[in-house]
Image 1: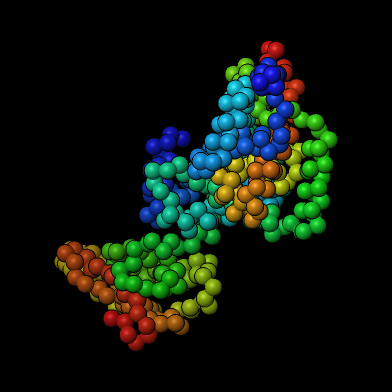
Image 2: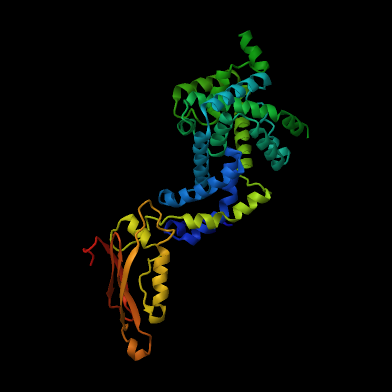
Length: 199
Length: 211
């Protein structure tokens, strides 16, 4: 759908047009589901979150800035809802185990230094979709606490401070988790990078 | 000086803290922190080859964003089925938005009761009176969902009246619902004469105080 059409639907929804909002639901439900699934890794919970996201969006439409990106705004609601859901689900013990496992994996991985894979810009040399699939698979191997930081920062554009507030952890912890998560991703994608560089 | 030259010729062995600093620089997180930014830039000054790390971090971020924001082409059958019902489920749960225009200030519960009654000009044909009342009763159902007890409609009163010029034009007489009593108050309809047909304006008020 064209951006102008989406903008018109948003404008109509903002003045209470339920049909227009319904069209927006149809337009973005797959994306919202996808976002929720990447955070939650559970289809049933993700599906519940899709509904919650759109219901929240409807009640918060007053706060949406018409000249901003509706899709990004919706994704943020989905991300926040996912984090809230995870927080509710999580037990203290599970979190501690996850955290320990995460750091142990990384310590054993002997990953390369930061940023050493991006110089040759492998995206220009290989299929973006193939890279995307590899990235998502790699993302799934991260400890949950690290994955949330990466999703919020890299996918949804949160600042470190915003992540700290959302996850209720110190900003230094955010930086640390992001750093180790990205190193881990780079390590997991190292063979891909080398293939792309050779290709 | 010799040490510095060595570092320039081979990848520098940076501590995690130094790498985190560069990562924060790449993420634009040091824009508001002059001291940290200066420290990061000094590090880059000492090791210019690390400049390559900055676009590397950004490329990884961009690739992640692209991948994550691309909906999956194929979902499981169960997910496809569930997604096909999302719109219907969402629409049945949509609360009446507070921004909907109501002629006079009214509490939110009252607006919920009146969900669907935002029409401004209506006249009911005699033959549709029963249907109209049924619609009123139906609207009390799932849309009244704001935590307050439901407000049963105690009575609906109306008058059969001819709209302006109804008799001469052969139009059916119209029925105007003038008042609806619910257990929490009274909803009164104020008819006022329009040019061609009665104009119905909804007013809400506390019991006995509406007008």
